[in-house]
Amino acid sequence: MSASLITDARSFLFVPGNRPERFDKALASPADMVIVDLEDAVPAADKAAARVALASAWQQWPTAQRARLVVRINAAQTDSHQDDLSWLAQLPGLPAVMVPKAEKPADLVGAQDALGEAATALIAIIESAEGLANVDALARSPRVLRLAFGNLDFQADLGMACGADEAELAPVRVAIVVASRRAGLAAPVDGVTTDTQDMTRVKTDAARSLRFGFGAKLCIHPSQVVAVHSAFTPTAMQIDWARRVLLAEAAAGGGAFVVDGRMIDPPVLKLARQCLAMAQLE
Image 1 (tube, rainbow, N blue to C red):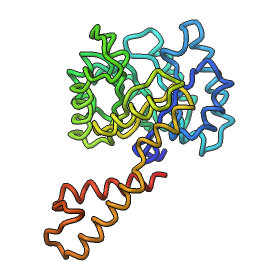
Image 2 (image 1 turned 90 degrees about the horizontal axis):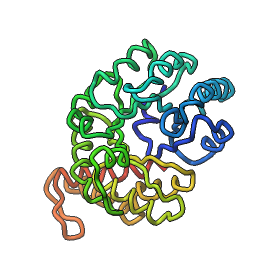
Image 3 (image 1 turned 180 degrees about the vertical axis):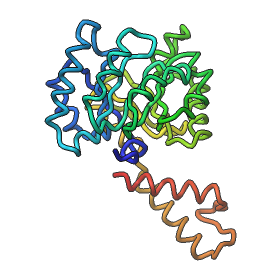
Image 4 (image 1 turned 30 degrees about the vertical axis):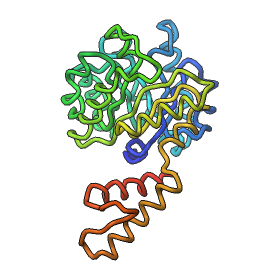
């Protein structure tokens, strides 16, 4: 498993586990990672069949396709959780397991134990007030490679009625980004946009994610992926600025210098390098 595929991913596309005819379509999309969902998208009566379908498809996929797969299992608080954990061994080499409704480190222990010596990473989703209260401990838990934000479940848990811009969730987003940084994790994955028709809305939401310090976004339809990637890709103007900053740094020989009338100091240099690093993901 290449951890860099997960840490560098900008888009995570959901596909329902009980719709195996959509698996290959999701993998054929430009999404960086594909999440086969065994949780919310699958009715209780279909969960066992979804596991069988995914295990069967897994045997047919080449290594390159398997490397882009994440499985969202059922939450630790549910009856299906242990069934999922017992079944995970049928997916050797699985890059990552997404654990929903993570509220405390104990909610991750079952997955950690079930994976044994496998190099499979965990992505913990913060979806409740309790999860937010323990976000630092969750971020520092073994195997956790990234955090994700379940923005819709979080609103439901707190009885919130957010506006379209979700301004009410700003403190939550900041807390998740800060916890990720403190734990040395890759930038977290922001929640979904429910609109599958208005790509301007999707790009606007993804641009907000970037401003808050998120490094990726969950997608619920293949049509959203290009808009998300566009938001997370520096513009030609930004790339040009970053290159000129680094050239000016070399010319300055370590002293203070100015680019476009702006004094350049170490934090700005770091931003320039981050800009160019993001551009190389294309």
